[in-house]
Length: 162
Image (cartoon, rainbow, N blue to C red):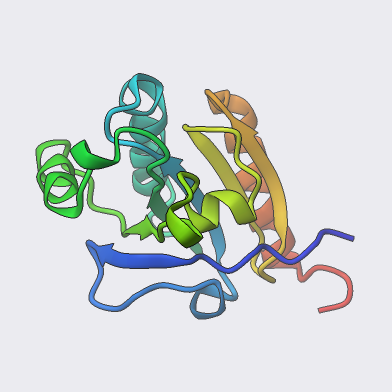
């Protein structure tokens, strides 16, 4: 049985009126895209993929959430720079800023909770709040689409034990 996804630990939310939580998104499939704005793989592949998913599944019970998780070059990737980045790249889905690690640790809290080795990382959470898939690096479009489709079908059919 899949384990519950760890709750996100964020310091700021952008592109949303209210902070998001897994509890507030229960009943929806969640695609969490962890990125850094100075990560070439994120800018070239991960963020465009997350934007496509948000657009293609806009009428489905699915929410794309960005997580800006900074584990290097901290001084260059503050919230104001992120605001400009989101505007310039026309990123409209909600983005949370991963909370700093305790006692000045370089690895942020949510990144640590999910044991992410780096960015980009794509995470799929089912409608019951369970971690179903986690991929570090480029997530193949067809595989991602199939995984999303399976989770949406589960939701529609009502998974056993619901």
